Image: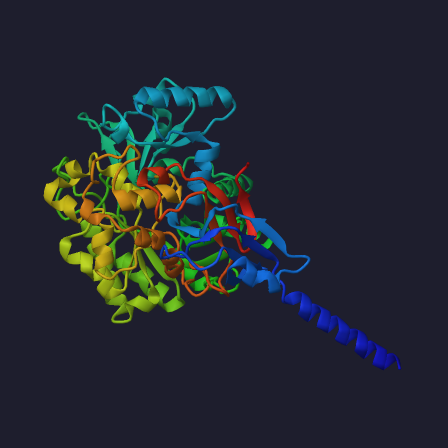
Length: 553
């Protein structure tokens, strides 16, 4: 008898669980549902169970899966999109900008000096002074600054201020002295120490030369770095981002990510690219970390740098800079090293993502990829980050070879005031060219390169459909042939980053079985006047069915 009763109880519990499991955990209602291609889906509701979408349709159609415990979230007419992703930014750099000396938007050396003065007053006991975000191209005098501009602010404290692109460092005399940099110090491989006419260092270090100073600064503690990462990730959630591709995370950062992921503390998803140290040994020691089951952390890519940046004249060009005729930029990795690392990545299953800005750097990377991957390039989904200045003959190679061109639309609208001066009228036509690369059949995911640019994906969307700055200039857009239509622009920030992360079967679209990642806005990006995109508000950010950000009423 006891065995019969036990069987009946177990059967009853099984039936109850089966009945309860048919109900959705949450249903988002009263919204306009827009998929990755910009099309409006039928219905006004999305049902979610745990972390998955279970149904998209009319509220009436979802009544059968609405149980007593189902949470109803009223969107009040807002617009629900697949979760926005940023395919290229720097998480820790954004966190540092949020919590440290932020020089973004400074319009002169005097402006920098004032911010530095205010920061020092607030932090009197801080010895090692770090900041970032300056851009001499935004100043009335666009020449690089000098260490003397900083020396009076903190003579006895070393100051290191990173340029907005992360490819130049402005330091004071104290920092130069600690690094032992004098007029006799040679340029390191892949770097440049700027010097005046007398041969004395000016205090500006380009690309690999920055390491001469950074080696003197004590590293941030893991606790502090955790603060940077969390501050940045929470900021991204407030911008509507549900996943970011961290384009350069060292082993300490990866370790912090893993701890946060295990503790359930990652507010949004992170696709991390391992960077720095002995990257070959790293790939041999650590298998790629990837899952198709609601992944909050994926580590299956490595980040390399082939050259510097255009703004600091470190991008590696075939011909000299039009405004610096003795300079072709810097190749920051020898070709033999790039080959060896790429061969190891292929053997170990890692995706390669290589920063390449200049036309010569881009061709070098394309050649290495083609040589190593042969005819099966597309399945590896190797990436070139930025693909910013391209020789015309190299543009169709991305599509032909299946190489992902990870591009950042706001670079074009930020750099357009001076890009032609750097490159000349002819060469600039092959720069900042997402439409040309797209039309060649390539996958072109969109990103921001934050903190170089704002991480706000709406700015990227606006930039690629207008080619204008936030003031609507120039009329008709800069190089308007590179404008993408809105449906393709939306794919750049939803479906295509998912593909670039090998996740297109679980995210990037609004389909049953896909992760319930939603960016919910108060405007329809497909129809709103372009200028109103910049006033669009993030109503809610949902990751894996959980509300990670909600705008205050």
